[in-house]
Amino acid sequence: MWQSLGLTVLVIVATLLCVLLFMLFGWYVVWQLFLSKFKFLRELVGDTGPQQDDNELPRSGPERPPTPRHRMKAPRHRTVPPQQAN
Image (cartoon, rainbow, N blue to C red; front, side, top):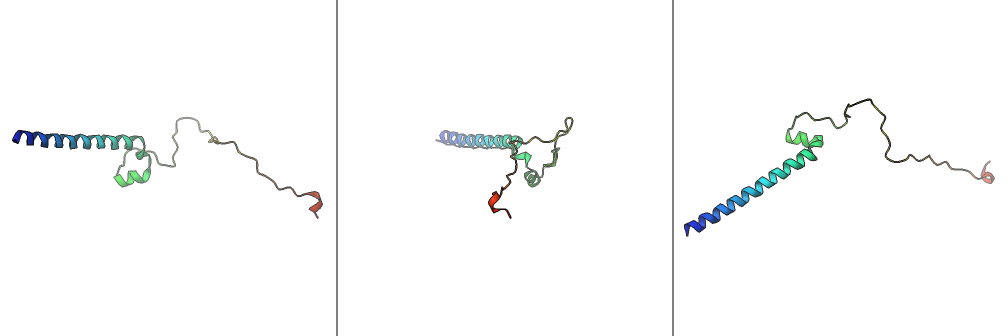
């Protein structure tokens, strides 16, 4: 009787420990890959590690102007028909 109860408690504690470790590991991975990039989250957690500011670009070579992702469209001009021009 006591052995089966002890085994049940051991299984429950081991399961909770495994779930807790899995959640902590998942949080660490998500923090390292994504969440640590946001300055306000770093301030909430109190992380003052060597992170770049949000508006600071990495300086790894000669500076180039940023390239647009999409082709720039020429502005449209309204043309007035000749009969309505005064």
